[in-house]
Figure 1 (cartoon, rainbow, N blue to C red):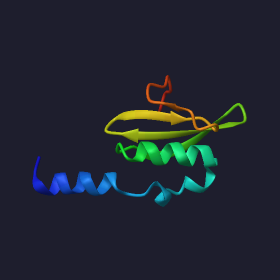
Figure 2: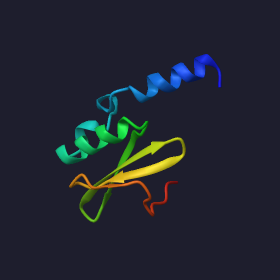
Figure 3: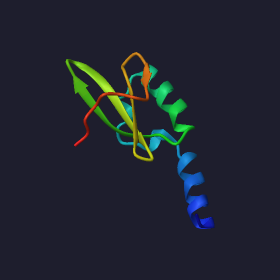
Figure 4: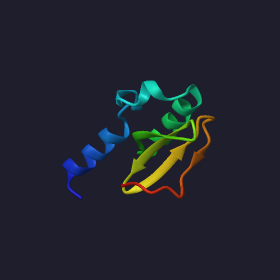
Length: 82
């Protein structure tokens, strides 16, 4: 890994999740949980609505995590992403 790659990785992990276009659609509990996952490099990808409930979907290095409306985090979800 080059110095530029390391610097890019560090900068990406310090990026605030509030910069996402999806941020305003999260519940307060989801925002709190998303901020916590952001410290580990996760970025908010999109929000999926299932059965009238929103599910925040975050990604990090090919991995996926989801956050329920109540802020519950699942880093091993059984979710299919197209």
